Structure formats: C-alpha cells, structure tokens
Image (cartoon, rainbow, N blue to C red; front, side, top):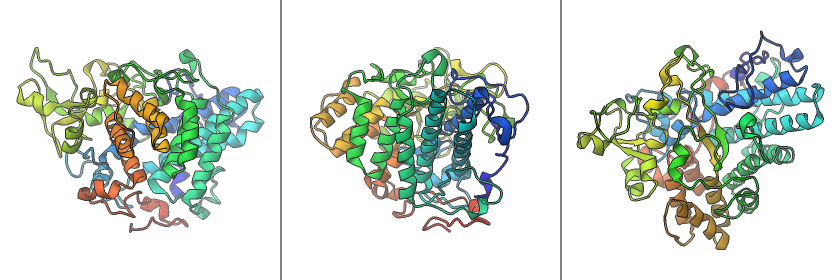
Length: 502
C-alpha cells in the first residue's frame, strides 16, 4: 500500500472547488495548507474536507484513466481504439484482456483509496468539529456513502483489496493485508445502510446539486446487492427508489420523456439522475494538470471524438471538434442496436456519412466508423477561455440513473407483474412494445439502454457471460473478471497479486 500515502497528511488537497463533483454545492478557495491535525476546527473547514471526499467521484469520466472509457474498452461493445496499439497501454491491455500488474493503470487503485483516505479522515475528525449535530450526521452519511462507492469500484475491479476504515500512518502502511471480498461487501452494505438513515430525501437544486441523497444511497445499495447475488434484498431496496414503474417516485425522480434528452449537455441533474458526476468548462484545466486529478472537465468527450473531423459547408453532419477516437463501437453492437429507437442518440455512423460525402475523418486504431454519440463533444461546448480546450468539456455523466435501477429491480425479481412493468416502462419511453419479461430480455434491454455508460463489463461478469461474450478478445475465465493489482503496490508490502497474474 505504499503509494497510498503520498502527501495525504496535508488535507488542503484538491479542494480548490467542487467543480469535479457539483457546480452548486460549494466554492472553496483554500488559503494556504492545513495539517490534518488542526484543520477541522469549524464547519467551513469540514465542508472543504467533504468536498475533498467527493472529489474522487470524478474518476467516472474525468482524466484519461476514467472508469467509463476503461470499462467500455473491456466489453464486447467497444474496442480500445485511439491512435495505435500502444496508445494507453492500460486501456489497450484491458480491451484485449492482456493486462499485467505492470501496465494496469495505478490510478484505478490509488484514486479510489485517495477518496477513502479523505472519507476516513473526515469521519475521524467530525466528532470534534464545532457544528450542529444534524449537519455532522449528514456529513457522516455522505462520507460513508462515498466510501462505499469507492470500495464498490475497488472490489469489482480488484476483488482482493485492503479494507481501511482509519487513515493510514507512516508506521502501519506497510503492514496492511487484503480482506476477503465478502468482508469488503459487508462494510459497503453497512456504510450505505447507515448513510440512508441520515441523508436528506432531496437537496436544493440551486445550491446543492450533486450531493448524495437517501435515494442515491438506496440505488447504490441495490446495485451492490445485485452484484453480490442478493436478489431479494436488491429488489426490496430498489423498489423504494423506483416506486410505480413509469411514474414519479417518492423523491421526485422519473424517467425523462425523451431518451435523447439524457445527453443534452445543459440538462444536468435532471429527474432521471440518481448519482451524477459534474464536470465544468470553467476550471481552466491545462496540460500541466493532466494526470494530477486537478482537471475538472469531462475527458471522455475528447477521447471518443473522431480524429481530424471535418464536414463540407451545408452538410447535415453534426458540428464536432476533433478527438482521439477511443471507444470505437464494435460491429456486433451496431448490428444489435441499429433498428432500436435509441440508435441515433447512442451511435454516430460516420462510416455512412463519410461514404455519402457529408463528413470526413481519419480513422484511428481499430476504426469501425461508429462513434459513441452519447459522449461525443460538440463545437458549441468547446471551451473558449483559459486552459486547454480538450480538457474543459462540461458534460456531466451518470453513475446511476433511474432506467438502470428499473432494469436492476426487474433482474432481481426475475419474473412477475412488477418485473414486467419495470421492463415495459423502459421500453415504452422509447416507443417499443412490451415483450415478455425474461432474463434474456432484461439483458438485451440493459445493453440497448445503457450502451457506452460503463456498465456492460460488470453486467457480463455478474451474469456469468463474460467468458462466452469475450472469448474472441482473449478473456480467460477465473482470471480476467478482475484486474491485476499494480506491481508497485506489492513492493515492500504484505499484499499478494491476484490469481493468474504474475
């Protein structure tokens, strides 16, 4: 665990603003650095520390090594793409299921543990902070829910991870050992159940958008239960989130009428959103920020854009800036979704536009001509102010949205009138007729509805379908369901590499 330490004794950390978590919650300008021993003196400082706990949530679509781009690449729906077979060794290795402890991006381990360290520190200090008890309880709930989210990613990615509930110190960091996945999941459940009891049902949209709510924690707990195979528990908690299928739930959430509105950049924190990562174009992120976690834009946008894109005057093709051509879509997904009403919002068929002379681009590595339209950058969203334009896209991303929880509850139930109604509601939103609810139908609906949002690989693993769906990509059952632990985390520690990896 030696790389977890870094400079974490200095908690002034990355709390310059809450831009990578929400644009509305708080805007903090730290004045100097504070040692963790004396930093938590009042509510303002505790708030700044909470911002730091939230900051790691940006991992979803922030930075080159983001969750959505990486997990897409390892699924059957996308290739890694990019500029060549060595463009991002980690994403290329996961796409072909040839990851090693040397090339696996260490940030998937470190960034999550950074968020956990900050949550642990704040939870340790909160009792002594001069602030109202109800505010302390809420801060505690948010910290526990975020810690649970970070551990959920870690246990899904690496399985055999240390369970740290107190901040590491220079004297104990080399003595840490791995916990079983069952123990980690038990702690995730405990954190979320305790958070549900203290989090608010709603937050003021104009001042606190992005902060976790009771419904958000329930949705995450349902996802955790389902990944563990606890279907009865998953169905019960997700029913509290979903309410009447197709209607408005007890927290005011409902499916958007138009599927394509989910991907309108300005449509942030809409009624379908349960857990959402905020990005901003006002962070002036520059290349000096790259890899440090300080860039606050949506990096997935530029990653999935086509290379050297252009269009003739008067063309009906979309007005796009150029990108890096990662996460190009497989022919298999294209064929599966081409007649689905969600096709246009999900996939941009540049192959057809180029053939018709309506657009042009230079094909990157593994080019198919099909690009992820949900996250394609648009010219009107290009930052014109300070910083690098490529690092300042402002599109938010969903970690969990209501259609996801509908389909998770339907999967947990498996059959029956309610499962049918949940499936029907997702299909009806895009004008599709009812089909009998079966696991196969739910699997297909998740693929169509959530394509490109980073869920597919975890779904395949949960269903036991990864080996059959990914055999042509080099997937080895019993090994490639999880990542290897970065080699540098093993050196001088008691940690052991995951089975099957050197």
